[in-house]
Length: 161
Image 1 (cartoon, rainbow, N blue to C red):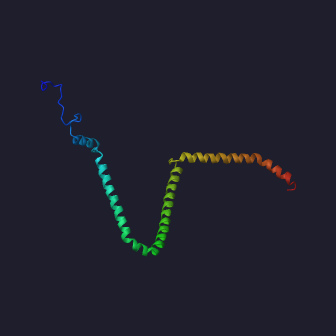
Image 2: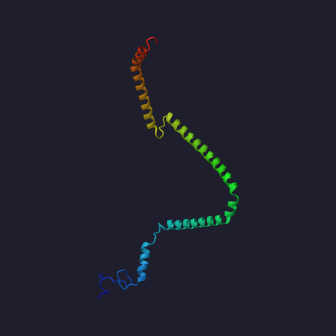
Image 3: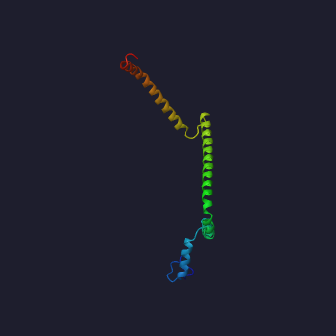
């Protein structure tokens, strides 16, 4: 009668709700629940490859230091001056290139600003320019207003001048 009734479901003897299920099948189910999805697989493979390359690099570097350390120690009086010169030349070259790039970017910005193309930060430059102009006009007005006062004080201090 149980086979004829469609509402009853048969339980699997190895299902997760069966207490008599072997421990191995629950262990596999736990592993499958934590296994990476197909979208995570390329990331997992990439991480493994990078980890392998990192280990290989550290190993080769360590062995290189071990084998070449006597040569490095014997020739160190030559390496230090050469390294200092190379460092100074490289720093000078990098700074010249950096200043060149900076000046080109600055000239491009000024060109766009004066042509009215509104480069980034143009509003702050206009605000600063208007503040400087306003301050200069206030100083000029103040000097015009109090300039006569100071002139009369100088004449009082030195009447013959």
